[in-house]
Amino acid sequence: MTLHQNVVGVDVAKDWIDTCDLASGEVRHIDTTPRALKAFAAKLAGSPGQTLAVFEASGGCERPLIAALEAAGVAYARVNPRQAREFARATGRLAKTDKVDARVLAEMGRALELAPTIPVDPARRRLAELVARREDLVGAISRETQRLGQACDAFVRRDIRSLLTVLKGRRTSLEKEIAAQLRANQTLAGKDRRLRTAPGVGPSVAATLIACLPELGQIERRPIASLAGLAPHASDSGRSKGKRQVWGGRAEVRRALYIAAFIASRYDPELKALRARLIAAGKPFKVAIIAIARKLLTILNAMIHENRDYQTRSAN
Image 1 (cartoon, rainbow, N blue to C red):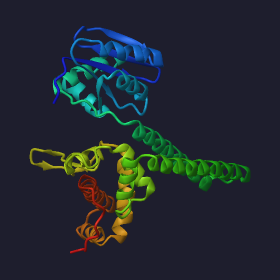
Image 2: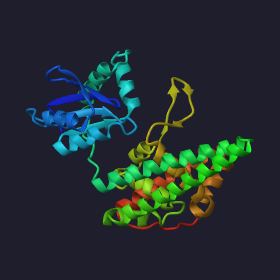
Image 3: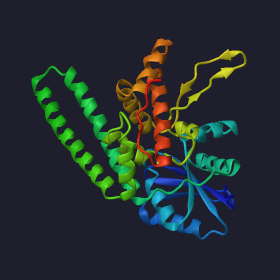
Image 4: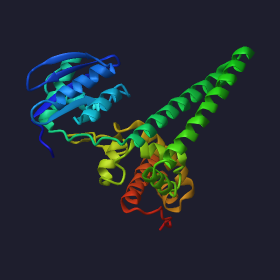
């Protein structure tokens, strides 16, 4: 692990960032214009020694900051907001303001010696934006479909149907662009082809895994399950044994794997048998599918790591 001489915490908002430089104690409020972010990144790059910028994943608001830091060659660590908040509580920081958050992030980076986030190559970054946009459209289609089922007025129903036609057309257009983006890059195209040999993994699931889980095939099964939000976490205290639950991780990856697991457990002999055993053991349906999703992710992780296609195995 690289030990950085200085850590700068960055609290990201839509229109500005608040920064805290631990070495100098300087606190700044900076607009998120390209010019201002470029100047901020250039200042970090010109600092003596190595500097690490630490910020939370903020639903995409952090993307302009990432672009500026990568262009300037500045290392950064993007952390889970829940992890940052728990660190703040552990250090007694109960107040929540932008300046406090920036200092907490800086102190977290120094105390935990956070490893820099691996920069995403441009082809994968564009794929991630396309996949995120498709997710938006899928959500909008789902909401409008629900409204159609509740609407009684004829005009309103026609209006909703018209909007659904537009939304579905945009979704189809996005899916074509995603396929073209995958074909245009040899590495991404190879992973797409390999992942789609697995049961339940269609074009949308494969694109989501490639775009949103770049660690696939590079780390062990437990860390990859945690990143995907499929690792069961204990909830024990003394003699009390709470139910293990999955939480955290990347929601879009978890959703994609849940869908893949549901389909795969209907057709693949090994996963179908696993689903039957879990249900027979009294596991709730969703718990069984999550367990199968975790099993499927382990298989996909090994496939990418070993450069091999999916191999159908018997139930025995």
